[in-house]
Image (cartoon, rainbow, N blue to C red; front, side, top):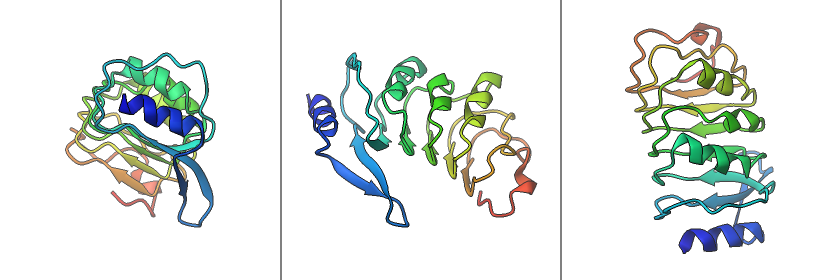
Length: 171
């Protein structure tokens, strides 16, 4: 019920307006975090005006996230912490304006397909994978704008590829 209300208000552009550090308008925020959502509604609309989506602790699987991300093609900040994502949804690679991505506390393992979806995010400035068992495949060489990387407790055994070519990256 609360989720439906928040989605409806956001659709009507009655939610929180979000701005970046320079004062530029990012878009509206939709926050469904910690709501009890049994299943996601079938929506055949796009939320082009949403710049920030927060979906912490919703129990989302990669398949559910795939559908959900298709609704927010212009999202610039995405937080899906504490869900059931075991892979990176392909639809994430279509979010080309994404600047901040947080996926911490998911059972996420990076395979070749997941890496490819992440590599499409050329505007990414912050990536948080803390507490995800991603394994050894992390490579940040394609993230030219990345300045913050969260990789605590991830199972990485060495220095991620491309790390030394990012002198401004904070890990």
